[in-house]
Image (cartoon, rainbow, N blue to C red; front, side, top):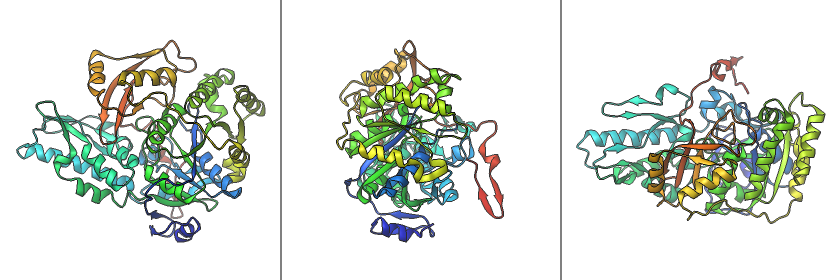
Length: 510
């Protein structure tokens, strides 16, 4: 690995705070630069993921090989999935970011800072209630969090009320942290968080607790993006870590700003399928920040399409078509890449490539896992051929009523007939309509619908909106569909059991 100071000099970062020899914090940028952003997303994934991170890293290495100064911009791994289903989350094979173990576990302490800030708020809320309750807090809506899958904490009993934990990646502090443009915006967003309601059913904002300066003190250093490197010695900015099924699923705005100021191209990744992270990246981040998007890369795999077709590739390619159509609604420059896995059949690959061609979309095979940047050279070349001007549009206007926003998402992105909700939820929709914020959909990642077992055409299916709430600091309306949970549990054979220490080295499963 290159020393972090050497890497910073190569990419012209003015000053870096080293965390050891190979990690560092970089200074914030005031505004977005001229670097063009390439978004990497995917078709509906299997439970193991389809390699978006690996493709993003390999693509960035390939663009650097072609003499384009490129930075890959990724989210930090949460220890929930690292210890749960996925294991390490720093890429794979020859397309990885380093140092892997540090990034996968404590890294530079950002997740700890976010968790601490979140739980300080909760402690002060309960202290306020205990000591005279001058703010007249009658209902508390702000939850505790921790960076771990722990189903036992979904519902807890406090001395005077019921409460529960979210996983840190789903917390409003994580969303605020990732969406804030600078420290002043971070302060404003923290102040505006709704912590609960008084006896007159009026909102109580965090600023009335009088702890915003303390929160900024906890988050200030963490707010600076993290600089690390790819296996091939190119820069990677890794910062923030919201999940894309229950939060907005993109790396921080502050890291994206830095990357666009220090590179010609920035390859970034949004979590899960294009109906999750990619939709939110365009609808929330790009809408609010107006940076230059060069293209969207849609990653697919033979195994994911076979699973979408319940064992049939011929049926499963329908999922590819749906995601392509969704992306073309929002973005004109779309390219498909098949991430090659060991054992993929050449005829299956040809079938998918021909299918994509029939849709009018360029499709490129990549082999970044085995070959690193070399395995993505063809993909990089095809992206560089795309027209300079990429047209971005949104499926709803911010001034649309809230019901219409949700309905347009369900019909245009999920391709369902519509959605149902209870009378109580409809009343909440009407009450929250005054907030002209983007919507943030929380639903299963394993289907375009809200039922993880549904595959294929769901045009006759009606989704179920189970809850809706405003995140006033994040400036989002979160819409929960089906039985989606904000505190995951461990599976029956979690990855934590596969972590080993051999000859003093920690080995994480992938």
